[in-house]
Length: 437
Image (cartoon, rainbow, N blue to C red; front, side, top):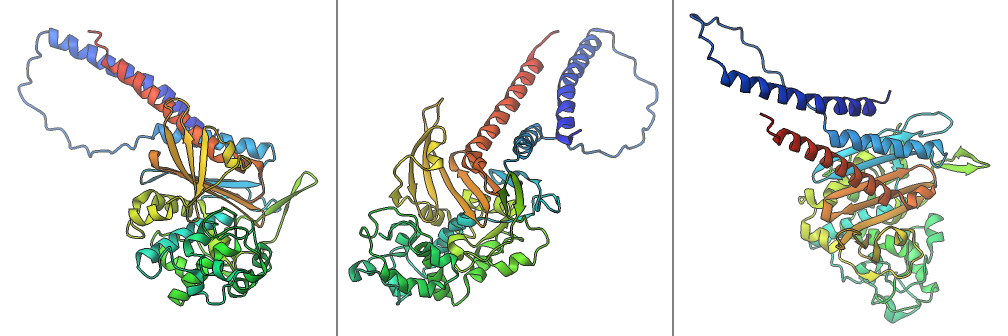
């Protein structure tokens, strides 16, 4: 039987039993107080000293949460919606859940665990934004710096617009370039220096800062700027400034480093109703800021704790807020996150989507800081809820429609479990407060 189910049943039995025990003691105490006092013994016998025993009581919230999440992902596995997944949830400064489900490789049937490494695709953009914020706080660069001042061969078809594109523009997808310009060159493995000079072949459709068009190649130029001001490869800078300080011990930003681990989830593709294992490719490792980070759920839990403000030594609260500062509204209603319950609006900040949702019960507006990723048939989602001091991350090693709804559905599970536990505790407190005697 599942260990979480066993613990839950023990809780169901234990809570009423403890209440009955408390009432019984109260009854006995009351009777003793009304009876004649017992004569004291003429001589007290020295009792042996019994060592104090600390009993670690199970946390009912974590038990019920783990059970609910396991049920959710087991259902997805049973329906063949996914090959595997790894999940991390943080609350305040604590990791309240982290675990894995399914297989790293369908051929080997090896189990995913909390330390299994995935490629996270465009969730890497959040790292790119934060890393830029760190160097802004250091005073080495500024959000308004012109790209051409750091990368002299950067050139658009318009000379004037070339000189107007800033670091903030490339990080917020507001360079004025058409949607996904030269993503194909990134995927072909061209260097960012080469790509920067090729932008002259693309006619901008708007002035920088005036329109949102998602970019990988332009976004990745932020990493090229960081390499030039530090004199180090992006994979080293991100390790020194983020991975090591946050103790993200399995995280990396290169194909070679990923290959050194023996605990990696392989990508998969569905073919004729069955999952087929694919090789890991090198796409986007030439553009780390746009999509080249590798991480486990345990790593992502530490990352989310930082994003919620619990590691100011890495980047101050003010610095994080500058990264999260909305730069441009994302219109329309076609994106999957725009169909989440209570959706109101979206903006793009520096490597992050900033959503507003309205609570059905209170009517209050809540902020969700979010990004999704898709690379090499991996799929990833991360979201932090500042109002709740909560973070949720899910990593998949296969394409799946579940990724479109997994954040709001896991968020609802968390709320439902919290309501259930609070209700049980409320009833228990009421029973204890009743004076029968």
